[in-house]
Length: 440
Ligand SMILES: [Mg+2]
Image 1: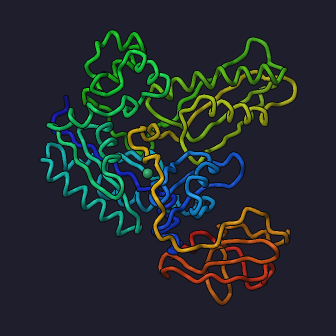
Image 2: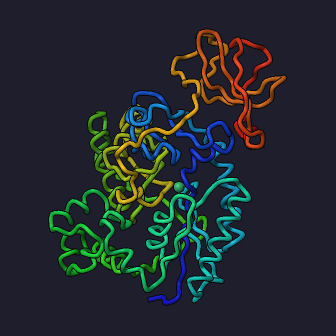
Image 3: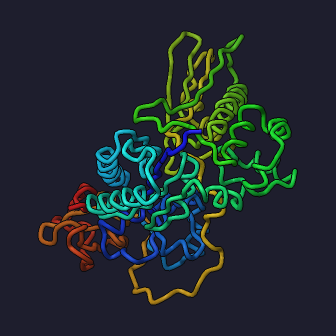
């Protein structure tokens, strides 16, 4: 065991929603949902004010809006989140040369200065880090620290929101033991169900299992790794930026595939194979890429990135099949490859899900409802959430549009809550604006 090792996990709090609240100050302190409004849309981000109503990331948007009907729903602005993410990672890179970004809003650090340090020195370091991120971006972040990545990640979840938790070596067993087995990286729904069948529900119970019984259930590699993680033994390195972060599988067919049904079946098999490696590494994927090589050796590639990382085989397979359909050439398929990338750790364990019961809403000032209907004027299709600029009023965002009119709230990060004004949808003083204009 690597005595005296300290790994930190920094996780931005409700990152997408916090970014919206930062740059659109009217939304600060309110329930905010980030995501689309279509029938298949899911929540890409939810502010803490909405989470108390039982809303969480990746939930169908319709369900989220039923649980929290007074929430403001805005479409995601990935350009803005990416810009803020770069600011966060720059702060972290300055603090620790050994840095492993996991996703736009999450990273592991292993500061060399903390090797062998006492818990209170780690606490000071983490407090300064949170303050530096807040100063650079205006956004809250939680930090967890422990003897390895798993404990650091669990600690940051325990610290949320806007908190700090250092799990020292003497308390790590007490912190791990009561957690559900799902809290460990690499325990997906299948492994969880298998463990439950054996009556193993907590990390403590898993740690107490006979290793042979565990490897019999989950295989040697996964079983051995989980047994170690459950006992707080986690020597996985913090891998510096740029490390390979994708798993893939591909098959060359004995005879070219010509029927779409055969292509679909092959894609399902190949995705399942890549998925086994994904789950084995304790991660989730955001980007699915499908490569199709035709009988004449031309290669076509299609890729799709989701707002939220997934470990769901059915979901990833459906995306891969859709991509394959678009990539399949005429005249037969010689090879298909599927890769899963943009890997993040598993979604947060159920333990950390917000309570289901909906508390009574407090005093929430009225905001105009976000309308779903398309603007009638095809030349000026303002949609709620669009960034706009008005010649006289400056930068703002569309709160509602329809019936030939558009309501814009004029505000940016530095203005404080702004005023809403309504214009004819074809007002020539109103133009589309760069979302980054809201950061000023
Ligand atoms: Mg986060």
